Every structure is written in C-alpha cells, then in structure tokens.
Image 1 (cartoon, helix red, strand yellow):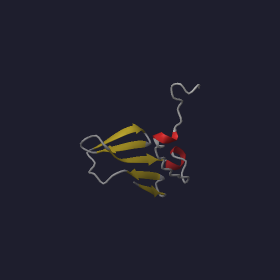
Image 2 (cartoon, rainbow, N blue to C red; image 1 turned 90 degrees about the horizontal axis):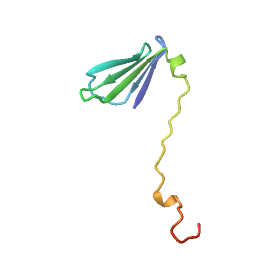
Image 3 (cartoon, one colour; image 1 turned 135 degrees about the vertical axis):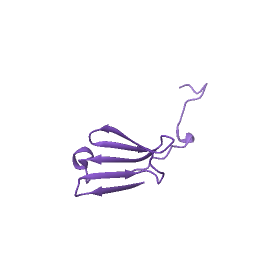
Image 4 (tube, rainbow, N blue to C red; image 1 turned 90 degrees about the vertical axis):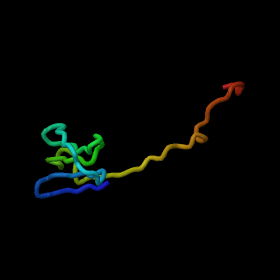
Length: 80
C-alpha cells in the first residue's frame, strides 16, 4: 500500500494494488474509489485531504489474531 499526498491540490491518493483501474465510483464530492474489473479496490482519492482525512497525521498498526490458547474458558465441572 502506498499513500501519496499532492500539496498543490490538497489531494491524497491511497494505492492498494497495482491492478488496472476499470471503474471509478464517486462516494461523495471529495472521495473516489478506483476498482478493477472484478470490483476489487485498487485506489482511493481524497480531495481536500487535510479536512477529510486529518492529514498530516498518519498511523499504521497491524493487529495480530490472539492465539486461541490465550483465551481462558471455564470447563465443565470446574466449579465456575
């Protein structure tokens, strides 16, 4: 994933893949989604990005699934 910010137009482009764009859908007057032939998200364009997306603040956090052994559950006959 790549995020590009064009300060001259206050536009952010979030690229999710390198697939060819087949269609662009307008979500509202400031947000556009680019889709491939199968309808998968390729990119998102955000106009007036500083207002719409709280730029220049950006955070990335990857959340891992907790191992099932970390969850403690009472078993039958445990008295709980």
